[in-house]
Image (cartoon, rainbow, N blue to C red; front, top):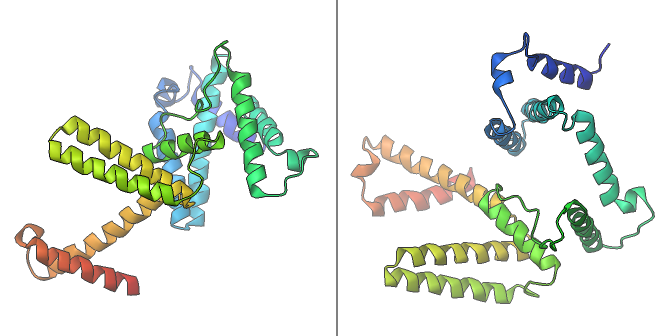
Length: 266
């Protein structure tokens, strides 16, 4: 009798069988599955944020299916299979945890983090097939959400000494970049405004990193908060028998401040 993992792999192989498999599954390739892979990852995050454990179990299964799907496609082309994927991540976990699987001793979380980053750097060097020296910033996926990519790039640079030593200069830099946005706005040059807004966002991410805040999650939380408050505004306007467009901004702003108090008590 097959165990659950073996059964899942067998089911995926059956779906991809050219003779009697599923036509939709047979049409897929690495690139066509990208949207589904991203969607499933976000649905796992959503289940975690809602603390829905049953849904989390189901969504993790959907995400695992994507891993199995890609491994099956690779196996059909003789590239690698699911066992290679499992073997690779097992070896990586052992390599990156010498304090667990070897004799290394780290006294602080900072030392453990530094060793982890060094192990990743060593892996990148080993993977680099060209004679050209690889940048310390190489290996950060360009497809990451912009805030997350920015944070990882900055963290990588900081690991090699390119960073402010403490927080106050970062606050100063935020104010400096904000002034430059104002100057760009006054110039009316849209390309310049675009550039300066990007610089401002970059340094805000840097500030978040120095304050030990994940900027991606912080922005997501603030967006949720905005959404709840805006829903409150909609409810108040609907209760008055009007549409949003019928209300003056001052009145809507009043509902906004009211929402801050009401929802905080909820």
